[in-house]
Image (cartoon, rainbow, N blue to C red; front, side):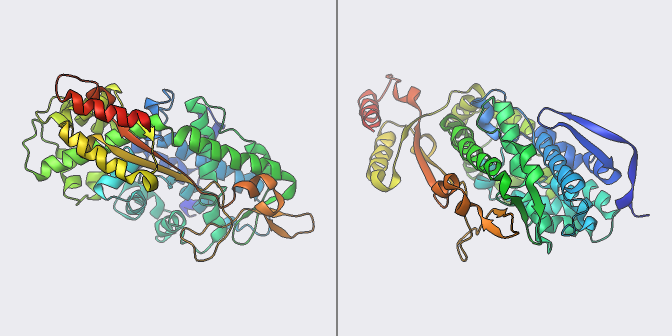
Length: 433
């Protein structure tokens, strides 16, 4: 008997605030959860700096990964089971890919990726295929099983139906994080009727489709996603914390490159600074480690690093104004000059941050990031693209919304101990806009 068929002697359950319970019967799944690479996800927040805006947002990628697994388990064990379009042989593969889809995320994921030129998807692949505990567990199913899991997560697996379970415009990943993030941030926007969506899901050769009778539940999901992006994920205070975090990482790297003598050697950062991060280095990074360095750097001799770390640790964030880069690019240039005159380094204290989201799109061949549309299964068996049937979804289809903010340290500008006139000039420009 392959390990793929091995069951635990009794079902294990994880109590979950969103799904009530996550159920585990497969020994492979239980053993994957116990690996050190998966346990590391307990030490990485799902929402990065959002806890500085919504104090409840302390949940981890471990929570979320279990939630995605549980949704896929319900789909393959309850909704798809016995349907001719579903290949039962893909069951364990779907469960493993769901559980491991976020395995390569690092601490404060997106800021780290941007500054240090990393890609969490590549690290997910390396963990699954490298010499790791996760790989050893997957190998017990079959020698090619780790590669199959990596292919599903990388969206290159031949069975597109399996891929669509964790990567499509309405997938288990999004269905979990919308509800989970809404629950932990305390907002009402992310809630939708997942039970109804699961009931109307149907497998097709290359993707999941939804019975037309459940269209309103799908509309509700799309709108909840739209609201969560603008009310939570792109919240300007969260983005201010993200800007400061990014500037800390940039400053630390610049100091290292200038051979600055850190009071406390940033050993965990050296491979990041050199952009030669091994998998072993990467797996040692989590948010506890990063915050430890930030706390140490509050005592550094370099004023900028010290100040930025203090701001992040003590939540003294930058203020912001609305900003249109296309129309106000001259303003940015003028502010840059004035900041230098005021002896405030604009490279670290003046930043434009942009957010952009496309809540739903139908298939547009040849476009960057082609998105497969959501299809409704009509009573006569035809498939209709969602926005053809839903006036609500049609209204937002293909409409990308973008928002720009200009961030600055108001407290430094209000400090009248030096360069008062220039600072007053800066404040007067900012207040006009």
